[in-house]
Image (cartoon, rainbow, N blue to C red; front, side):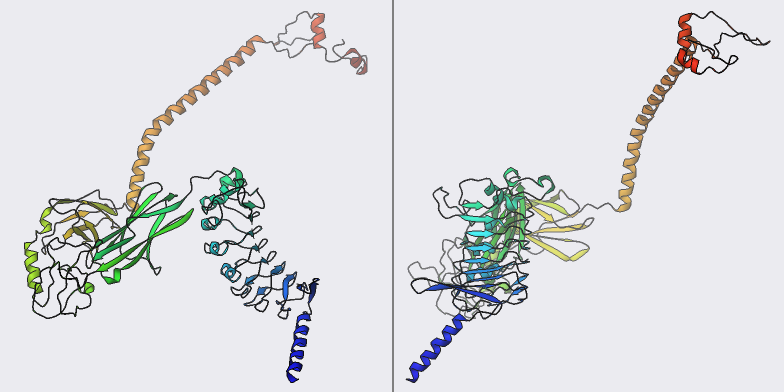
Length: 630
């Protein structure tokens, strides 16, 4: 009886909890004829400042609109396991925690439009595995990171319009056809809707795929607004995507010489990586842990859109084994490739007497090893071999063995004597390197040339160079005998440098060396003198030309003045100036001479300045009349 009573009380509590609604919200239950239903909750109180925590647990749709909420805290909806639709729209939300949507396993639709979000936690989308709609329009997003592409693969409706986006990562466009390699057919029913309008797009290679997509038809990706336009650069401002023409854009492609390299202990290994792309990609090497490779790196771009890089591993040991990742990157995207380096070989440090063990092909091999170089340093010394039986050397397909003679195992302290005997029988490689010289010296670089006569092409060489005044900055560079050429960079202008070519196993002091000087950089005084000389020469050439032009201009001006004077004299001679014309008798003064002539009626008419009517109107008196009445 007590158990039944407890069960009844529990059911009553659950029903009360289900029917309880937050004071600032409105709850609506949509029932069905079969007795089931869904519950939706609407919270739109302007005074609400926090996400409500007492929403019924059976809520399927939650809308929080037009409130004063500024942030969405961690695990804000943890208990709403049945939630399908979450709308937090037109509030003042500026901060979204990376764990805000934890435990929303069945959420289909997330809308956060109309807020002031500048940074969105894209990694939080992994908490919503079946999410299909993500609405972030009308916010303040400035960028979409590359890692966001991994969480947007299943999204079929993505609205990023009315934000502050200037570009999109190339990898984001690669998750949708036709850039993901999927076959595009008109029969595809699943469409992806993208809202990208009303953003200040900067039209360059970074969004070249988006521009290409806007020009396509019959694709599974549909743009809400086809009339996307560029806001920059200056030459494309205001131009529609459909009419924008960009320079050639190509995502990098990386090629490597081998995926896996196995080398013997103490040897030198070169790793090469080639990349193509436009613009020309940049190359850099990293280890599997993300750290950059500190070894010598040579990089060159032989032409537009092509670049290669080589790293040198000198005297490798077990610590050099691992993955080396070559990464290529340009504004159109990035790519990488991995080379795995393995190191084989052991060094014996036991004190047993020297013992030479002949190779017996019938006996089973105990370990795969290789003889270390006679110049092995303590840094390359490995753990001691403690097993007393003799060890058979076996050459694998990927293993490089320095000698084709039968392998031997050196045990005990007599190894030094045998190494000396072997060294004495070898041909000293430095004797085969000749004609060492330096050409093409500049202020910060020089080219070193040599001739390897009779020396194996793969013989390792080390270039050692330093400035006389900077002995503490001695630098080295690894190469091989067959190259015959190496570029020395990063030199100091105006210094004398000493450079030696050191071959492995050569005698001390017998390595070929040479000296050279780098060019000096002109100081400010020298540049001023050079400028003065150039200016003086320019003046000496330009001054006669200027004088000639001035002379021509003056000559033309003088001819024009002479012509004007002649015209004036001609006018004086051609026309008579009548100072006084009258019909009255004038008294001739003693020194005056007046010329009189008959005036015809036509001339009188021409001299008349007024009509007869005007003359009559201006008539004043009998003694004062106009001189001429017409």
